[in-house]
View 1 (cartoon, rainbow, N blue to C red):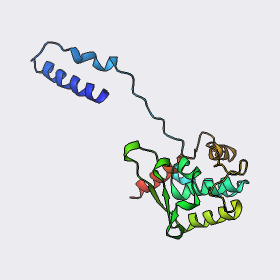
View 2 (view 1 turned 180 degrees about the vertical axis):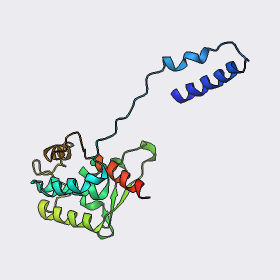
View 3 (view 1 turned 45 degrees about the vertical axis):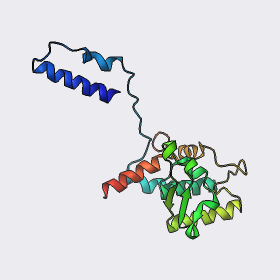
View 4 (view 1 turned 120 degrees about the vertical axis):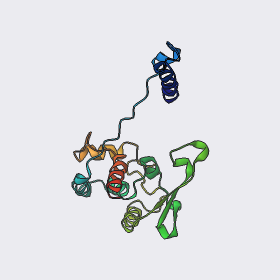
Length: 185
């Protein structure tokens, strides 16, 4: 609505500037629209601090959460996708993880599975998680509530405990990866 109102106003302003009209009713059009929602970016550390964060994660005491944070760092997926990671979603001997459309963010009508290539390191983490959680279907099975995924806030609170409150969020791994990849492309 704001974009259309801006275009309408620009056309009438141009006509007024050329003297075709004295005034126009579109002058206050954007005033009646609801204000635009501004998205606050998720907190993410600068790329030069990534090594320090990863060393801190290595020292985190709860193994499932620690390995989940490592998977966020290696895969750049959304937290909801990772929390629901299931063993039956791996293809090609674990080299590919296919996140089903129901867990992928996006337009409900156009959702496709999210195909995530798994690095050697990410596959090793999944293998280590299997040793910790056994044959349970969820890769990141909650130590506090077996049979359930880790809670939404598990990774956030872990980052807080590591000293990254308001500096880094779980989603910040995606932002960090985007920054690094766009700088080096």
